[in-house]
Length: 238
Image (tube, rainbow, N blue to C red; front, top):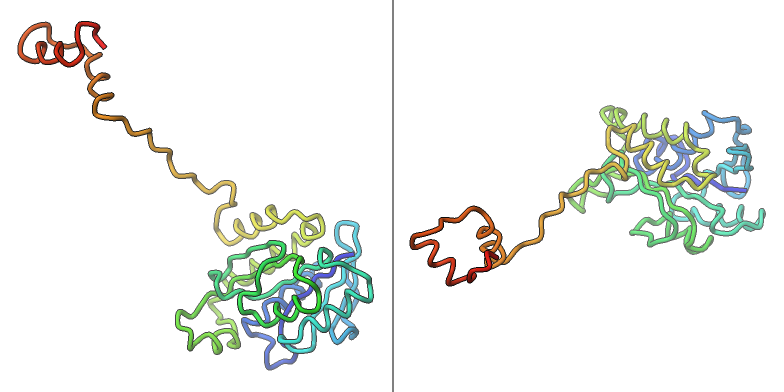
């Protein structure tokens, strides 16, 4: 069984916040696939379904962001699951808007929801970070995170959420890099493996080596240049 936990704050007041992109992501998965209606359990809203032949529990903690781990941890203990059976989806300030990254373990990066998950669920779970961009000034972070997505953001937000929902089975199959490539392509980027590699520069040659190579070209038979080359390289034509 896999738990896919979207992080956010409950209530209409926060529904459109950038901080609630985790809720939006699991809602998109719920709409796209055959999951049960949302119900309340584990201090959360939960929905059961199946992806790629495996049972999946979608969960939206209703404890507010800072206590997200209480709800997710309770569900994990109930089903006797390990951190490897959890995928957490949440907002990431330090990623440009529309970018996504998925990895196992790591730090919390100052995200209070992840701090709580680390404390209640262990740390070696998979973390799907969805970029919301940084306002550029530290003093603006709070309002940025708890502010609603702008209309212009729908240009990247909608394809991001739709692509994640369409390919949610990849989360179950642990096809993490393939899922990241799908999202990158949907947002007009390039898959990781197709990014152009920097051209390899030819190894630098010493001035002596270059002179030797030059001497292999057709050289004058007589004159000052010929005499100089004879002194440098002898008569072997090196």
